[in-house]
Length: 196
Image (cartoon, rainbow, N blue to C red; front, side, top):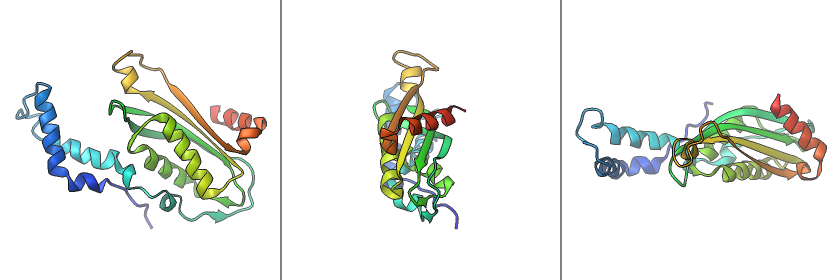
């Protein structure tokens, strides 16, 4: 069965209103909303919102799906998961990579489920710190592992393209749950494997 593709149905329900507001914003910043390049922009922006804000419709239990009974109790890492999100402070994009590690306690999830979970959590107005904590909390709640750790790297356009204008600067956040809180060796193993 193919993976469910989430879309923001509220955008679809409010399409005419959103398009009208986008058109008005364009007019208010000094654009000619009737020029050729902008005529279809309100509709394009609205279609984009259906996709980039699809996380509001996601069901995390549905995404992680069926967990498999497996007696593997060693570290599992899914790293370099690319994500794109929108900063809730400026509605500007931020993006980067997410690394997830967990030590199963008898239940594992399909590896692609972690990438789908990242998509669901990041496709809404967010801050990087919340993404990091949400991912760790969901994995802890749904899989009840001995421990999990999430590291998120992000490049924020609200910092690179405006304001202090420091392109190339990255923000790194982490969330640690369970065994990783108390076991320095487990944390070090995760961080070492993520770097390579």
